[in-house]
Image (cartoon, rainbow, N blue to C red):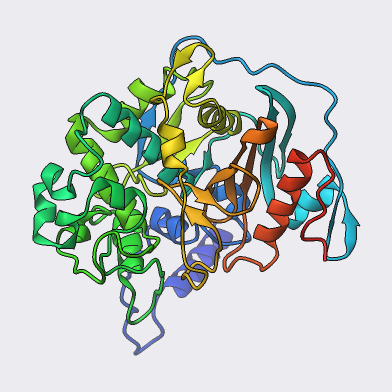
Length: 412
């Protein structure tokens, strides 16, 4: 027994000791596993899981629910329709798999008529919304305007955040920020490598490494065009809106969200904002960082559809959604490769009368179709770069639902 113990000890020493005459290898600090996971957040082989576990990966700010839940009754008589795409007849199961669906919800006339959780997700999971958060920020701006905390949408950003006066954002109005027409010199282009783009630097330093706040670089940014003169999709614009909201309301955005949207709307689960910057000091990522349950995203869609009403209780200002979804067309040669129009952080991406959507990276959708009184929520895990068919096929299926299964557009 002693002989065996001495043998194992000798082998262990051989494995860790340098060879005779060679210097010991320098010790290195292993990479931070949390930072590593953040770097792989979007990876296609794991994002079906990382997209619903952001609270374990990032600094967060809670958005708590309270009070009676807004009950959503169950409707009957709805069967997920088939559809035609690429010249083939397909089923809902085909659609869900082909468009990387994590969870799917259909609400019609205020009733849940279909709900589906996939990839081992559950009703208790809180999913990342990515840029659906921009639309939520729009709702919060509308509430702050109604409360008189924001005086006018034509006020300038520098009026609320004096630090912005040194750069191009200082003279940009809140309206121009909502419309993504700030004119600042920023591209929504995530080029990492030897010469990273500004968007890439912000992502790495603010979100992954927590060294700075997302909006910090807005203080000294230059101008590329006159404010209001062109559409340029920029998450930095929405980060500035969040900074304005924080200053105007004199409270963190998460607290304002809780008190003025989440609790009054009777959400069933707590939500949360991902935070940037140093732990405990960061600001809510208003351009991409909100997380919630599937059905609570559906309730947001119902508020939008119902002009801000939860039953007989007003949550959003009267007329805000009409104003927010008054779309300005953007040029077909935009950097995102999309066609349609943009309002106050809401998209028009099809020709369905009055329809609009809150849209997030990797296939997150709240699609509102007033004519059929339908809200569709699709939470996805598109790989990056995005496959060519997924956006088009998603909207083809949305059209099948809102048109009673009769819409075959996009089938050729």
